[in-house]
Length: 482
Image (tube, rainbow, N blue to C red; front, side, top):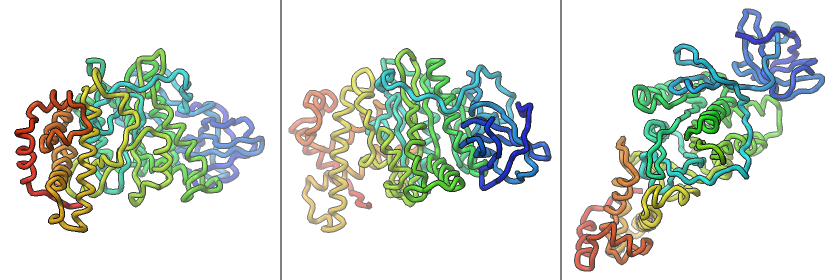
C-alpha cells in the first residue's frame, strides 16, 4: 500500500531502469518515491541525483509501462528503510525486505535506513573467536574468525551453492569453552529458481531454519532490486548484532550479479566506465558493503561476512574479484581440477588464505597444535604438488623415495582431508585427520612442528618404526592426475 498523500505528474523521460523528474526540488538525494501507473500499480523508486531542475530516479520494479504522460510520482520517505523485528528469524523475504514466503505478516519493532553507518575504527574489536563451518579445508587451513569478511572465489559450474548451503546449515561459533548458535542471514542476488529451491529445501526442517533469514532476489526479479538486497541484509544483521547482542553470519551470493546490476545502472546514467565497463566507483561501493562487518566495544554481538564471487572465465584478476580481494581479509578459492576429480568441497588450499586465522585459533579456541600442524600439512602438500608437475615432465622413474612419499601424500591429502562429501567434521576431527596423514613421514621430516607437540600428538613415532610406516604408505599406488 502506498504511503503517499500528494502526487505529481512530472515524469519527463524514461531510459532503461531510470526515470527523470522535472521540477523535483522537493525530492532529496536518497529519497524513496512511489510511481503510480494508470491501472493503479505502485512501484518504488529511489532518487540517485537531485537538483532544482531534475531528479534521477531508479525504479526497483523496472520501468515497463511507465510513460511520461501517465505515471504519477509522490514522496514516500526520506531514505530507503527496512522493517526489523526479532520475529524475522525463519522468514523468507524479497530483496527489499518484504515477506515472500506466504506466511502471516510480522509485527515489526522498528525501521532503519538500509545504508547504515560505518563502524568507528576506534570502537572496533579485534576478531578473535573461531567460527566452525564443518569443512576441513576452511576450518583447518583458512579459518573463519568472528567479525571477519572472508570471500569465496568460485567459477561457473563449480558447486559453490552446495558449499554455501552446508555453511548456512552447520556454521557455529566455538570458543571460550562454549559453543554458540549463529543467526545466519542469506542475501541471494540474481540466483535461479533451481538454486533458490535447493537452498531452501536443504535448510527447511533443520534446526538452522529457525535462525535463518533469507533475502531472496531471483534472476527474473528486478535487476535494480539487487542493489538494495545486500544493504537490507546487513541492516538486519546490525539490528541483531548490535541491538540484541547476537553473533550474525551474513552470506552474500552472488556479488558478481550485484556488480553487473551496478554496471547496468552506471551505463543508463551514461557515466564514464572504468575497467571492463564497470563504474569507477565500484571499489567504494563494494567497500560500503564489506566494511559493515566486525564487532564493536560495548556490544556482545558481531557480524561476519562470506561474500560469494563467481569469477568470469575463472579469471582471478577480474575487477570484481580483484577489488573484493583488496577489501576483504583473505579468500577461499575453489578449484576446477579438484571438482573434476569428484572431490567435495573442491577448495584449493594453496592460493586460499585467511589473514585473521591466527586470531581465532590456539588454546581455548581450537587446539594448541593447530597453527603448526596446518603449516606442516600445507608444506607437505605444496611439495607434493610441485613433484606432481615434475612427473608430467620427467616421469616417475626419476623420482627419489622421498619424492614418491610426497607424491602419495598429495593424493591422500586431497582424497582424505579436502574431500569429505556431505560429512560434517569438527575442528578436532580435522586436526586428528592431519596427524593421521603425517604418520607416513619420519618424525625428522616434521620440521614445522615443535618436538613437544610431535611427542604429544604423534607418540607412536620413533626411529624404529617411523621409516617402516613411511614405506608402507609409499606402497600405495599414487594418482598423479593434475
